[in-house]
Amino acid sequence: MWCWFFTLAMTPQSAAGSCANSATPGPIPRDRWADVQRKNTLVFGVNPQNARSHAKFIDKCRLPFRLLVDRGQRMGALYKTKGLMVKRTVYLIGPDGIVRFAERGTPDPGYVLSQAT
Image (tube, rainbow, N blue to C red):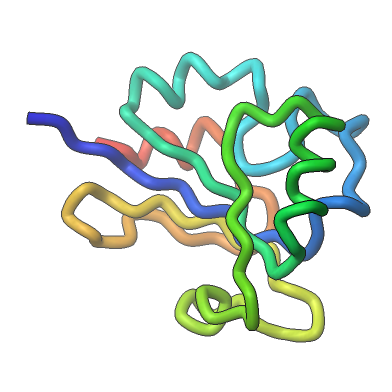
């Protein structure tokens, strides 16, 4: 039997973002990716930009996770991040569907992953 934790990072934009600020922009830096895998965690970035914008950003920053298109900010509405600018928020969702962690901004990746127990 397998179980996965899901990390959703609701982000304002992808194409306008910079790759220079960290090893990987987003919820989990590239240098912590082994920790993600040990915790059976899938990571997704989510924002309302289109798939073409996401593909460019993934290539530009060599992201190890997928970006999901939130057309119409439907997920944003469900996770209380919807607005003119998406409110940057990271969620960790357990295999049982229960939100184990939620924080606005850019929380410490180690702390986010420590909640995956």
